[in-house]
Length: 106
Image (cartoon, rainbow, N blue to C red):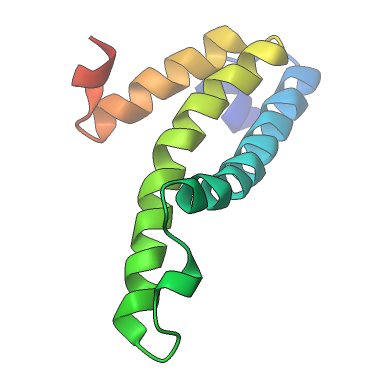
């Protein structure tokens, strides 16, 4: 944990615990939020034939592609709610730059 704290520039164990909590809440919330949004735009598992592999695969691809931006948005929001906005904003910028998507923030 000491190396992680040094790498992230964190000074206390409480801050580290809060960051872990934010990551876990964000992941769960993003997965939870994706299903109703997919239904809202008219996509659900019921739209695809259960015996047709590609139908289920297409649904999962759409869901994963939707989870990604929801996760990015919620990470910053939950970071702000838990008083760690600066950490998560820097984390977000670094992650998007590494993925080649840094232009989104400019």
